[in-house]
Image (cartoon, rainbow, N blue to C red; front, side, top):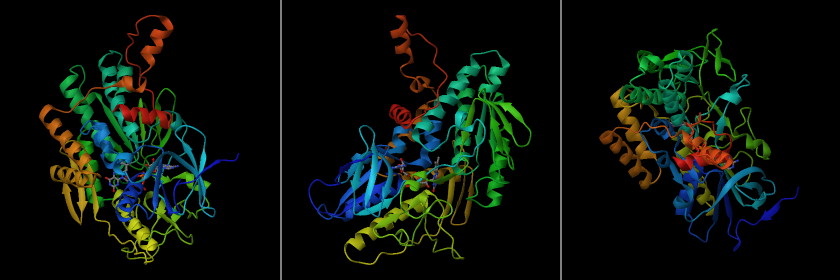
Length: 474
Ligand SMILES: Cc1cc2nc3c(=O)[nH]c(=O)nc-3n(C[C@H](O)[C@H](O)[C@H](O)COP(=O)(O)OP(=O)(O)OC[C@H]3O[C@@H](n4cnc5c(N)ncnc54)[C@H](O)[C@@H]3O)c2cc1C
């Protein structure tokens, strides 16, 4: 089918810089470009299916109710007033012709011509063909998923507290997570902490001991970003909280009625299955003529220029960028925010330099370490070789991330959220209706009866639209 062709700029012959993705790399690159290039020098076009950048390190706190979900996203249009923002997905591109194919949120697909490409579409969940996983699991990468999980976990407490059936109660209170990287561990620990807090204060018919939190990890350790002793300490802390951490164990299957089977032979019923077992480069790359390495990443020079391709740059989770600080050659930078944000700034500087006829500068950053929150006042950190546990690590986690979340507006709002939660306790109310907001109206419209229905079991967001709608609802 022939696509409608849309010129990037209706006015001039300024070079058009197309930024694919408005996440960490996309937002920071565009921010810097709009600052460095005066209006007449280039038109910057940012394309993302979401109208906002998501500060993913705050998702566990958003799920736990310590931070308002709206405050962990940064609106692209407000932050990038000198860029053209298109809400839609790049579904493929032919760099040889410098044309990208775009599906907007509404309306027909169209083609956009550009001069310089920044590929920053990040990564997606790396799933395995495990029976029942796609139908019954949920990831943890978007604000919609964080909101869903928060409502879902709290709704399970309501369900368990409102029945005397021990099987229903056990199933509702069993929460299964797969994958022990920082995203998985933080989500697991923060949500358990929230559920424990809620049960202790507001559910007299339940006890924290009624809950079962299971973490399944295929390798022999969790948190590969910290040393083994810190990883072992974290397992000990979680176990001391009654959480069940299963190393060297794999998820084998999950049935439609929630029966989870593990590779160690154990079987149990669980209404919650969260998959955080790694990521892979955005599969949209296969619809482009950009080169890819054996792991599906875009191979880059240290300058962040895509290897062997003129006028094309990449950074972040989907890029294989040489790590110039590594002892051996061939090592690439890890997919994390620490590199993404710094690479974005270097990338923007290099584009501006090349447009001015100067040489680009190689990206060099030595990974400084990692901080992870394990619930309110609990954490683990290893930064510049210094190892911190418990409250100091948790404090460092908050201080680091509030210094990193983009824009003063978001920093102020996050600090206000934390302050309010300290003064008035955190909010632990399930807004399960967000998952099915039309249910009562449809019932009333079809039956003529008032729709006094009990809140439905939350359905998982199925489409990007559902997620976006949930995200707006906060
Ligand atoms: C829960 C969680 C916690 C984390 N915590 C930490 C942490 O504590 N420390 C740390 O260093 N890292 C952390 N990370 C990792 C970090 O967030 C990522 O490494 C970082 O976001 C990568 O940046 P990126 O720009 O490459 O990708 P992203 O930030 O994911 O941005 C990609 C963007 O591309 C958009 N996109 C996708 N497909 C298309 C398309 N077809 N067309 C156009 N746009 C598209 C997406 O909507 C998204 O906005 C965490 C990740 C998660 C999920």
